[in-house]
Length: 171
Image 1: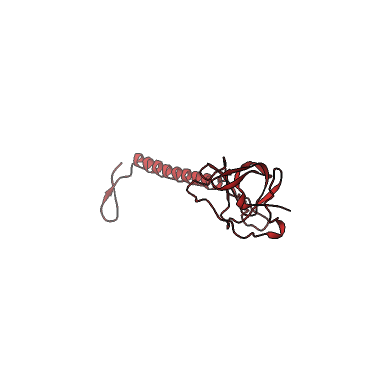
Image 2 (image 1 turned 90 degrees about the vertical axis):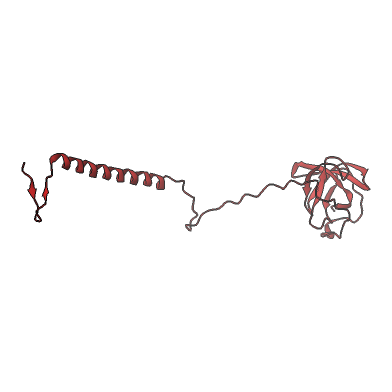
C-alpha cells in the first residue's frame, strides 16, 4: 500500500494493526468507565437506610446513659441541709427496718451508698436527692454517723449503707 499524503504534504499510513489497537484502547477505556460507574452505584445505593417518620424527618431514639460510677476522691457530705419536700417526710428520725426513706439534704450531690458503714469504705452507688429506698438493716455506728443498709425498690442491685443524716421517713 503506497503512503498517502495529506494536504500539507505530510506522509501518513494508517495500518489495520494500528486501527485495531486504537479501537481496543477505546473499548478498554469505555469498559473501565462502566466498571467505575457500577462500583459507585453499588456503593451509593447499598448503604443502610434511615427510617423516616411520616413527615419525612429522621426518627431518633434517645437512650439514656448509665449512672456514672462514683470515686473515692469525692469528699463526703457531712452536714444535712433543709429538706426539699417536707410535706412528704417525717421530721423525726424513727427509721426502722422495712421503713421507706427518702434521700434529702445533699444539696443535689446525692448520697453515697457504701459497701460497709463508714466514710472510708467502698462506694457502690450514688442515690439522687428525693430518691426513695427501703431499709433492710441497721443501725450501725461508724465515723460519727448512724448508718442504715438501704435498697432501691425499683433496682435491687442499687443497695448499700447510707448515713442517717440524709435519710427521712416517708409518710
